[in-house]
Image (tube, rainbow, N blue to C red; front, top):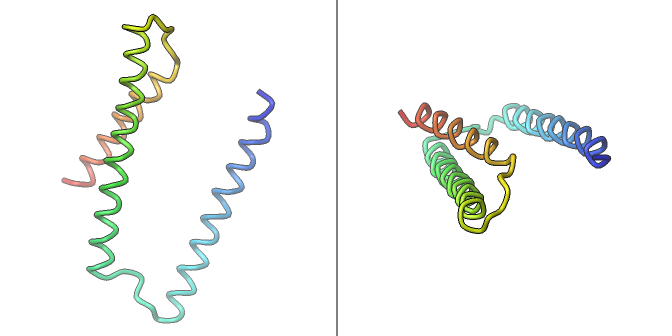
Length: 101
C-alpha cells in the first residue's frame, strides 16, 4: 500500500509534464509557421488511433477471458479486476462508436 503514496503523485507530475511539453511544442510549431495538421497526417493518426484502440480491446478481452477461464475451469477466485476490465471495454467501445460514426 505504501507504493501508492509515492506512485500517485509521480503519475500526476508526469501527466502535467507531458501536457506542458506538448503545449510548448505545439506553440513553437505554430510560431514557426509549420502546419500542425494536413490530410496525410490526419489519415495516419486515424489509422494509428484505430490500431491502438483495437489492440487495447483485444488485450482487455484476453484479460477477461483469462479471468473467466481461471474462475470457471481452474477453480480460482473472482478478482476485482473483472469490473474494471468490463467497464473499460464498455466505455472504450462507446467512445469508439461515437468517434467512428
